[in-house]
Image (cartoon, rainbow, N blue to C red):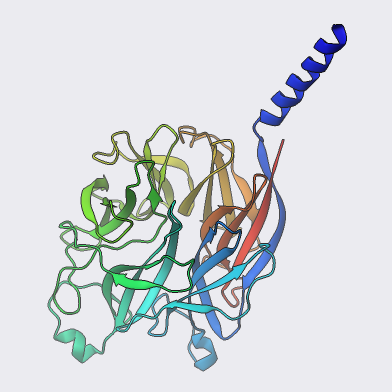
Length: 386
């Protein structure tokens, strides 16, 4: 009898040990996902397919320094959305496949989200290269960056694992946005960051809008889709301020059902910020500083329901950092920063995107440079520890 209880107690102890959450993450290695000296590669996202295949999408444009340019900009007429893949997170296809090339200009920031039915959504936005003569004919106001005029946002959609893409699908204009398109039409909604699919099947996307009189300040807003990204409607304001700007944002749903917006800021000393909705996105509580610098932010649910929050760090030493939050993301002010890399060559890096490889490992994807050299797509593999 005592032997039975001894065995039972041992089994219960082992079960408790197995159920005990992992306390942290240790870095296993850094990997190069895509690097080519002919190209400036940046702004990646990653998904894991049901069969285990990993797909990384990123923006690729010619390295203009090869053609006598002094440097590269984040707008380029030959900026295309491309992807590479892997089955082990360490070896990747060498030649990228095209996702989408915008017919009127360059595209930015392919942000992939995989829905529960396997559909892949990839959001982006574009810039049209227009001459000064052409720009002088445009109806104002419009967004401009080094001779490029902003086209607004769009998304493409794949139902066959990324082999083929339908679209573009243009989300609706949201009324806070004051900029017009090059053709004088209201801009379709846009932003960079992770979408999320709620437990109710609704898809949430936090978009940005330049809504101030001097067009120097932006706010963020929630739009939603109830048909897998085909159609979108406005829901609510997420964050705005008289001085600070809010822009690139990822949204995350907690186990309890709260929607958490992780906000990049401007004119706020590079502070990371957060906004929470407890009513499905109808309203958001006032935004809060999270107590640290970094941007943009991205969130991944770990197997024990805690949240891995990753971000670029654009202060010396330049690199990639992370934090682990509790399941409801309420402990964001705790001092728990994890340094993944601090060997970056300039501020032009980051834009992290994490994905679970298995129950014990995570891949964090980002773009990087060393010694201010070629920009390339890299990753860090992490392992959960006791």
